Amino acid sequence: MTNSSKKQHILITGATSGIGNQLAKDYLIAGHTVYAVGRDDESLAELKSLGAETLDLDLMDRDKVLAAFDKISQIDLAICGAGMCEYLDMPNFDSSVFMKVMSVNMGTLSHAIEGVLPKLIASKGRLVGIGSASAYVPFARAEAYGSSKVAIHYLMKTLQISLAPYDVSVSLVVPGFVETPMTKQNDFSMPFLQTPEQASKAIRTGIESGHDVIEFPKKLTLPLKVLGTLPDVVWQHVSEKINKK
Image (cartoon, rainbow, N blue to C red):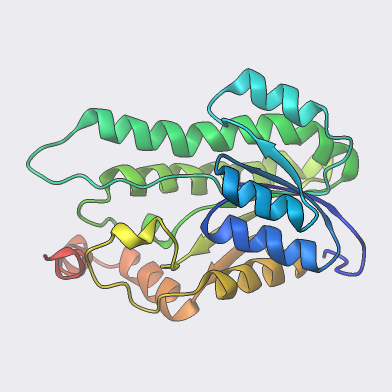
């Protein structure tokens, strides 16, 4: 369990938008040292004015990521929240879009993990990866995004096992729909839509409680998990209804 009263050194990727940006602000308000990683100059400037150490960094560039993270003396908590979403519209399967989403979502995460892991081993800290409730049930048009999130779920749950001998805790965050620039493109109903503030609170509370899996809101994630265990025809019908234009 994380001691919330202890000042921590926290690195957050995807800190210039959405959930990551709200987490960075909330951790700064709580008095922690925050290393905010992102690409948006305006957001980075705002976070810097609030006291964050900012890194304008392309997380797809492995060498630059490793070099930049190596310069950070201590990391107690790393939250990897960078990512993207693009949808596929059948019958056109655009492999370039599919591979871009897979590459960005897995590449930014894997490079960040490689960079922070030596620091987390030294501090016996916690690694946090952002998955998605879309990984529980296949949804039409989300072939690329959903596949990347399934991969992230598998990776984080595997790391929970493989990093345990090194006293590094690992949490998988499974959010439902959150009001961010990424979800503004969605042209379908988003039940139980959360604000960034709600998402940040749920994640911070889950981390503080030492949860391996942090799911929210339960009224969405739990039914999706149940749907995933039902015969294919059931969740296919639900998916078609949700994504019907």
